[in-house]
Structure formats: C-alpha cells, structure tokens
Amino acid sequence: MSPNHFLRLRYKVLYLFVLCSVFSIGTVAVLFLVAGSTYQGNIPIVNLLIRWLGNTIGLPITLSITAIVLFVFFLFVLSHSSIRYLLQITRGLEQIASGNFGFRIPIQSRDELGALADNINKMTIQLKLSMDEERRAEQTKTELITNVSHDLRTPLTSIVGYLGLIEQDRYRDEVELRQYVQIAYEKSLRMKSLINDLFEYTRTSGGMQLKLSPLNLVEMLGQLAAHFRYQLERSSMECFLDFPEKHLIISADGDKLVRVFENLIVNAIQYGHKGKRLDIMARSDGSQAVVEIVNYGEPLLASSIPFLFERFYREEHSRSQNTGGSGLGLAIAKNIVELHNGIITVYSDESRTSFEIRLPIRK
Image 1 (tube, rainbow, N blue to C red):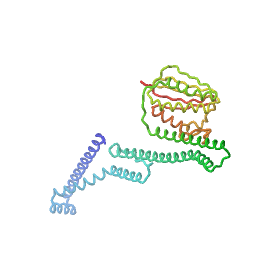
Image 2 (image 1 turned 30 degrees about the horizontal axis):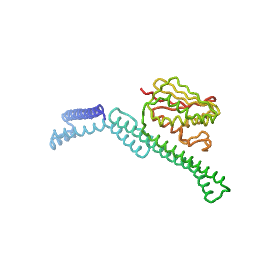
Image 3 (image 1 turned 180 degrees about the vertical axis):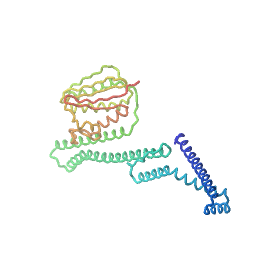
Image 4 (image 1 turned 90 degrees about the vertical axis):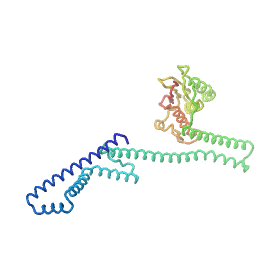
C-alpha cells in the first residue's frame, strides 16, 4: 500500500470522526435548547422527563449519553456507503473463491478500498492466466506423449517384425536375410533420429544456457553451403550465395545456430528440389543481421504457415518417414533463434519459399 493511500485513509477516518462529533454535539445543543424553551412553556411531559433525567443521572451524564448515541448514529449513516462497498468486495471474493474467475469487482473509489478491489481484480486475472497456462502445459504434455508414442511405434513395429522373421528363420536365402537386417537397421536409425530430435527439442524449449561468442555469419553460411555440396548435386540443385558484406558479426552459440541453418537447408533441398535452385543470403539491416534461405519448389499451403513452427507439425499430415521428418526440426530452430533474441519467419508464394532469420548484430 503506497503512502498516499495510507494518508488518504487516515484523514478520511479523522474527517469522519470530527464530522460525527460536530453533528452530535450540535444536535445535543439544539435539543436541549429546544427542551429548555419547552420547559419554560410548561409542557408537563417534557418537564417531567427533564426533571427525572436531571435528578436521576445528572445533566452532564445525560448530555454525554445523548452525544454518544447521536455520534454512533451519524457514524453509521456517514460510513454506510463505505461499509456497503466493503461488503460488495467481500461478496466478490466469495465469487472468486467459488471458481468464478471471470468476476470483476467494480472500482467505485480512489481510496484503499478501490485499490484493494483493483488488486483483487489483477490477482484474479493473473490466477486465471496461471491456471490456463497449467491446463495448456498438461495438454501439451499429453499431446507430446501421444505423438512420440505414435512416431516411435511405427519403426519399432517394423524392427520387431523383421527381427521376428529372422529369429524364426522365415527367409528364403541369405539375400533376403540381409534385406531384413537392412530394413531393421534403417528403422533403428529412424528411431535414434527421432529420439535425438525429441531430446534436442526438450532442451531448447526449457531455456537452455547458450555459450555465446563472436560469430561471423558470412563465414559460417559459406562453410555450410560447401558441406551440402554433395546433397545439392544429388538433387540436381545449384546453390547461390549473396553476401554484400564480408563480415557480419553476431554473439551466438555456433553449435546451436548451425543446427538451425542445417535444418533449413535440408528442408529446402528436400521440398524445393524441383526448383533446381537454392539461395542463401545474408545482410545487415540496422542493428540486425538478416539471413534468408530461399528455394523455388512447390509453395507452402497458406493454411499451414501459421503452424509450421509447432512441434510434430508436418504440412503433408501423413506422418510418413518418406515425406516428413520427426516434425520437430522447425520447432527446434524456432526455439534456438528465440534463445538468441532473434525471430524466424517464413514467406511462400507460387515462385519462392523464403525462411528469414533476424539476429541482433554484436555491438
């Protein structure tokens, strides 16, 4: 509670006390003046009452009791609105305690009661957000387990099946035996890749610590393009580099950032090979380094773009290892970029698909 609020409450109570005192004393004075004039007017009932009070308890005590009664009466009348507002706040708390987190207590004053109502409303909003976040986390965990179970079950079923055929000697010759072993081996690599992706996603989404050091983006991207020369040739693609500046220095964890660009290049080769071209561009834009990975294959569906960086999302919705990976690659890339205080976006039309990454330039 701020000092201003405290002073407002203190002086409000003091003002109410003084006002009630003035009203009660003034009313007592008026009543006894009227009573005195009535006494002189010889009204029997008033005469008897005044004489009885004066003779029984004395005039000073009579004045004091009357003033106290009047003080309590005026205090109740003048504080009625504040008491009613306090009761309204209490009923609001009962509503919130019963689970009605959409209830809001109206702010009717600028004193501490109004501040109390405002703080209760803020607390209710924050509590509702926390509960919604907890529900989303629980739903996310359930979805994660479901998706992982689905993706692991498919290759595991194949491995168990082919190893079962081998164990039961249900193969015609050594050629078929080696074929079964090869399939089981490929499926096991698929499981290993999925588990590695899942582990990496869990680490990056949990706010892992980065080992930051100065990094020249131009040099790193050039080396990556050279590493993918064989895959590009197999896909009949050409890679074009566009680096207007020779040095584009950022603070980054090189190992983590390489994972991002590797994923984007692999996706560009896999899904954009029909365009026969891959562009890797890097430039500065004010205080940011901008990297674009562009392919000219089939465009992305407009409906899929908002969900492209979600975990386990695949545009073709087939969950087939031949057409899609684990569905975690872009989610991992997004986590890593955001850990570097950057942003990653995608744009796609009939002519090109571009992934753009913006990272702060090292000062």
